[in-house]
Length: 387
Image (cartoon, rainbow, N blue to C red; front, top):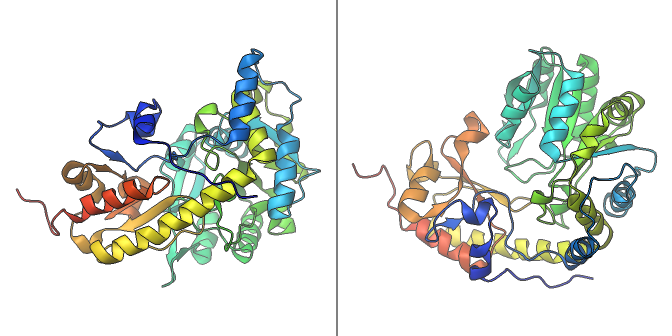
C-alpha cells in the first residue's frame, strides 16, 4: 500500500542540523547534497524510538537481522536471490568501496571510474592506495551510456572498476546487457568490478534496475556489490551499508575482513535499515510518486523559464543533471547560481571533465521550493556576469 508522504514544514527543515540545511544561511535554498526533505518513514521512526527506550545504543552484534532483511527485500523488489550470498555490513558505501579496493588492488594500481560520476569516487580510489583512471561515458544521442569499447581499452591497464549503478548524477540504471558485457570484459582483463548500488531502491516503477551480480554468471562469480538503505530512506547519518558477494573468491575476501569493518556499522543504522527493508516499501513508493510529480513540474518549469538548459529525466533517484552551457554561465554555473540566485546546487566540476558547464540539483523537496529555485535561477541574465 502506498502511504502519502508530505514534505516537512520549512521551519522544521531549517531546524535540522545535518549538512543540507546547516551549510548555508537561511536565504539560500539548499538543493545540493543528497538528503531528502521528507519526514522519516514511520517504521524507521518506531524502530529508533524503541531502541532509545531500551538503551540499545551499543556495538552492532555479529549476528543481527539486517542480512535477512536485505535478502528478503532483494527477492521481493528485484527477484534477486541472495539466500546463499555472503553479506557484510560496514559504515557506508564509500567505506565498503575502500575496504574492497584495498584487498583487490596494490599501491599504484589503476582503478576505472566512468565520468561524470559521484565526486568522492576519485578520493576513495586514492584512499585505497590506487589511482583513478577516468573513462568518460559515451554520448549516444539519447543519453550518456557506458562506453564499452573504451572500457575494454582501459581495462588493459586497470585492476578494478568502481561502477555506479544506477549512475549518479544521471539517475540511469545500466541495462542487463551492458552489465553482462562489462563482466565479460572485466573477466578477460582480470579486473574486479565493485558496483555501488545505493540508488537502486529509488528506481521508478516504469524503469528496470538490474543488480550487477544478477546480470550474468561471470558477474556473480567475480564481482562485488554494495547496498544501503541510506539514500532511499534518508538515513545516511545513521551509517550502515552492506557489501555483497555471490562468488567463492569475492565471498572469501569479505569473510577475511577484520571484525572491525563490521563494527564500524552504526547500531541505529542497522536497526533503521532493517526496518526500511522489511516494512518501508509503502513509504518509499509514496516518495517515488512525489519525485515523479516533481520531475513533471521541473520539466514544465525548465521549458517555460529556462529553455536553454538541457537535461534528461532520471529513471532512478532524486538528483537531476542540468546542462547550463546554453546560458553562457561558464565552467561552473553552480558558483554563479549560488552567488546571484541564492540556490545551492552541486558543482559539475567535481564530477570529472564532462561536468564542465553542468550542475546537479536535488529535487527531493516541496513543489513550492522547486518552483522558487527555478524562478530564482531564471532571473539571472544569460551570458557572462557583469564585471
